[in-house]
Figure 1 (tube, rainbow, N blue to C red):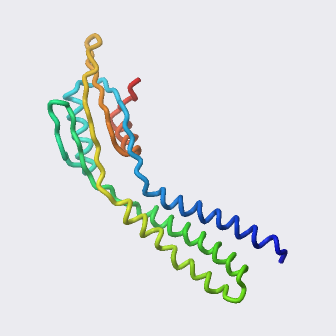
Figure 2: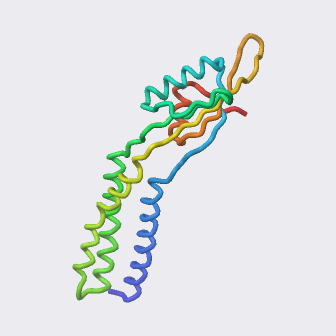
Figure 3: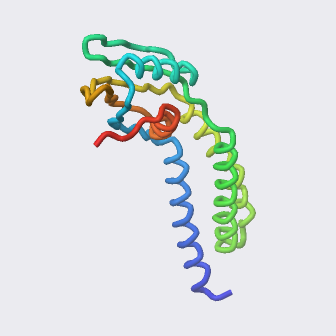
Length: 177
């Protein structure tokens, strides 16, 4: 085989392995965001809906600051079996490719490098241990004032971005301008 092909293939495979490493690391990254949402409902009605929503999603009230109209919910976010298996398979493919390239570069003891595939379950284990964690959702309610007969409310929410999207859809909340 051409002598320039193996080193360049090795460098490209090594770059892909680095990308795979950071992809696996990013699978457990905290994606907490804060948004300001508006609702046409009154403050008390919206608070009742929010409490019911989070109760249905297995969150519990962790703290209440009544004078400031703040509520903090806490719940355990379970890791995804699908993502754990997917990351393990991606890791297996990446380590197999790296092992094959290393086996071609070091032909005398190349079989040893194919054993890198045995490390691939570590990606799923890493995800499983880090992704299962307790998460908090912090809410602060504000009255938007009266416009005619209708009373609106503003809620400032700090939570995981997926939780924010699900909450906006379920409770018909709109981003406040």
